[in-house]
Image (tube, rainbow, N blue to C red; front, side, top):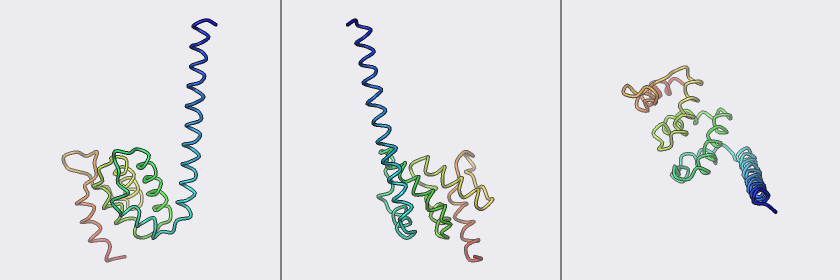
Length: 136
């Protein structure tokens, strides 16, 4: 065998390992989405409102958390708006973005930070909610 053959074999093994890992990750993600769909709204709310739901250093946890956010919003549980407003201070930018986009789409409002208009203004959102919530 030549060096080229060995390199090809090693590349094939690496690609196969990456494919298996991707398949397992997708399978795990699908199982998690199925579990979220079976979880009642109280369980989703408790998970998302808890400190254990915030692990910015662990990307897989963020993916699970984002799926939980989307599932909770999809159910139109009235608690999702104040929960998402509270999560606008989250340390993970993806969580902030998902929450802000969902709030903008649902309310037609768009409160942005005066110093950085790419970020939402959590205080303005809270003030809006305090004025809006009693009318619901």
